[in-house]
Image 1 (cartoon, rainbow, N blue to C red):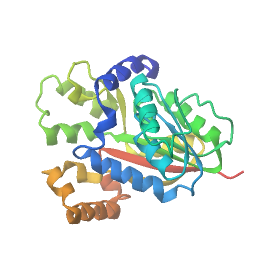
Image 2: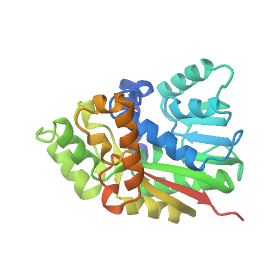
Image 3: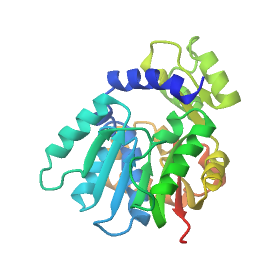
Length: 277
């Protein structure tokens, strides 16, 4: 199965899911907060131009627009495009620069035309490495010399930890899914259970790093997004306590580059820069 074969299944999954609300619930709030933090760590000042490729319902794109950035969102899921347009319309003073259906492997922007590219989903839903490299090379093409690229990947071991922490490790229908995940990093869900997610590639940290390098992008950092924080017992109680929330974030910052912790995160992130010419 290649990436194009997976696309209908991925679109079906997100049409049934509510991606617009996901990052406001449970441990996904940690993913949201850390992703924002890692974006701001390197992002040039507004009004820089950003492409949010695979930008979903516009959670990050709209946030950046309110900070004065010119953000162009593309996504292959019609529901996400509609949600992003609606979210943009609700912030009339800071709308998105554009919202359209699109493919992260084929960006419509010209060479050397944008300051930054966000790939916060395409690299794990493009299940074929050739397509992931095409996506990264396309990000490099449109980025100006010195421009930045953020790429998120799902950890190779995320489904193992998720199933252990959230009670479906022993599900008979999940056993073969997990076996393939651990052997190949190719996640497939032949069942109708949305808890098992949809088609994805699960990265080892070195794989994400090497993909950036192969695409001609210098890696500035390879870090965890959530670290082990997503596995916290009674996460809501912890997160809703401002003191404990900041303590958790501080601990994750301390270990974010530690090689032995990278595989324990649900997501990892590479941050790269296009060489100045």
